[in-house]
Image (cartoon, rainbow, N blue to C red; front, side, top):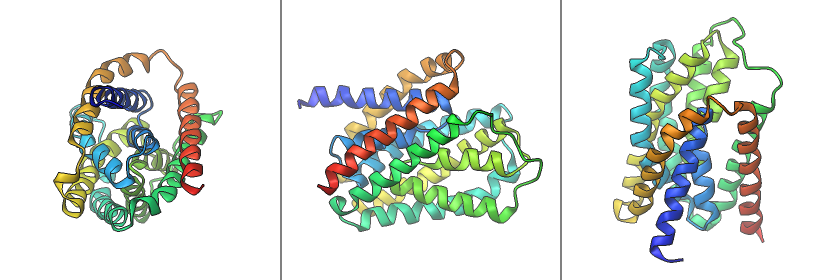
Length: 256
């Protein structure tokens, strides 16, 4: 594969990932990491590249939600510190294990993330708050686990944190989405710093990072327009199923 063709492919990956995320409010990391691992990148390089690109997208997204009032500080403040700790732990573990050895496990995690997205959108009823406030310990543990899985698997913060918070407490869905997006910036920065320290900036695929950003910038306005016209449930089911198939293939190839 020529350098130019590979760069174009990475722009397409960034486009698709941002299209998914902009349409569903989740899935950028899971989808792009699945594709990168699927084409042969080591899990640590794939996750580092995706998270570096996400630093910019999550900053813009979090700031936008803050300006629009889609933030609930009672959720944001308890999530930041455990989110950072979880991200550091996940990134550290990913870089501590040889790429080939951990690849089947990462593919398994991404497969599960695909299943989470699929189940989230195949539900016949919309997710509604249960009328009670989420206990603080649940918010802390959810943030820790979601961030750990996000860094280790290259994605999963949104698919785990967003539906879980909506289901577990009396929160407005828009404020859950906004709060999760804002905290994701801190989670992403923590993961990227850990990757930089552990594998060094010279091992980052900066060309991939730039291509993902380009694709994401192109897709963002299109996704915003499309999400108003395509049923979210249908798109979510399609994306969840695609993730499961893609990572099942990677898992099988890694084992045999």
